[in-house]
Length: 192
Length: 137
Image 1 (tube, one colour):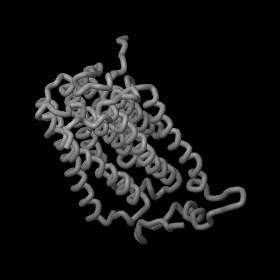
Image 2 (cartoon, helix red, strand yellow):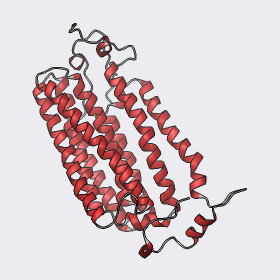
Image 3 (cartoon, rainbow over the protein chains, first blue to last red):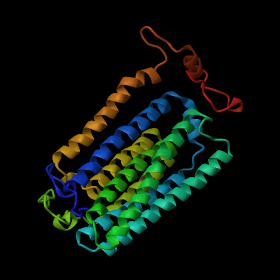
Image 4 (tube, each protein chain N blue to C red):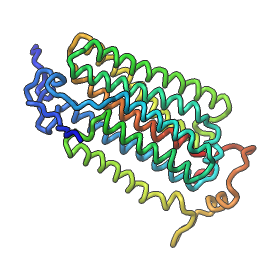
């Protein structure tokens, strides 16, 4: 069995490494997915008064804390990218671990928040607002969970100074997840 | 203003991360600025003025997204077509909104109307005591 690196890993016919091109392609498709949800939400928010009433049930400070957590994790991700470019795999891995910790804190906060909402009768089917709320925030949380998982795998190899280019790739994905939350925060928590 | 060059791979690099060097801005400074913008987006709506809320919540969100995309994702030094692909997807989002918003946001048109929805809109929708749900159509 050959141990040669796949040619797609190193070629750059598109002006950038194939892996980075693939991540941008994923992000482009994610823009359409999240963009569709956000656009639909805005349509309903502007035309249904009940959305304002239900939106008042969300707690802004929880959304603000989660925004702070994700922004901080994004800082660690980009510092990991910088460390990887400097060839410091151990530091890059540590930064990815800190980024993952941020993702986990985000998910824990989200879990408590949802448990509180459900205990007050706000479920996926209780109103159009909460249908959007759980769909948008749930899909985003799924992306956070997948990102944390991939990041931990990348950190394992980065720690051994291997495949350091992957640190940037998972970082770009993570920043996109951060950007999605930057828009979900005012939509779901501020605009009441 | 410093000129930035898009990283170029030779196509034969065994360790692309070593071979390419992105221009790294002061990330901590960008982060602190993002936190300041977060505080603005929280404080603005507290004034209770609609246009201030729109600017501080959504205008600042666009600004924060731009800062993250530029400084953390380095989209400004990626090949030009990356920005075009992303912009195309955003245009699709706008087209989707423009194409479907009239059906959702209007209650009647040239040859159609939504009687039940119209009625709900007139009465500002349901009594919370009778459930949170709006009638589906």
